[in-house]
Length: 260
Image (tube, rainbow, N blue to C red):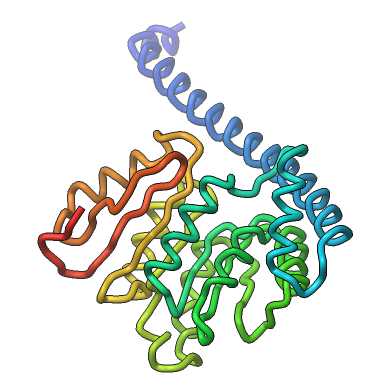
């Protein structure tokens, strides 16, 4: 009885704590389930897309591979970026002419092929994919498109792990490439956009003279966190362009008065 009397005043606090953690656990479980479903759906999509493109494209021809991708996307659900997004991507690559590109989120290899076909002769692409099956099939499509391993490298890991290993990989490249990336494409988990951007800065992987970062998003709220960070540092960031599904930001270390 005395235990009930002593603990009675604590009941509201106990109830609030249990409710608070129940909400957190529920949110965590919901996120884990969503991730698992997204991974499963992504694997099914990648396998279907790979089979279609591999069997119908002209091997060794990047344009044929992309046209076959577009044909597939016309009649099937696909993780490939849309034709509109592809146009924005190509416009940025042609303007920036990057010698070194980082892609976070390889998916089916569609954007990888679009990037590679526009890089300068000595250009190189590092593309990151978390799922081993997706990475394997995407790499095969890149090779089918006619590109060689000397032009690209697939990193099968989380984006955070890949960024940590990139400095040692860049030391083996020529002097121009070792300055860092002048173009980064982020098309993975939007919740990782800001942490990965900060990691790229810490590892000094962004070219000091300036780096364009393309953010692919399905919902504008996906960019809320990273855009808030940018607004707090106007001396280092500016928004270059905002088009449907694609936001281009420009990062330049210690710069001032960036043009919008």
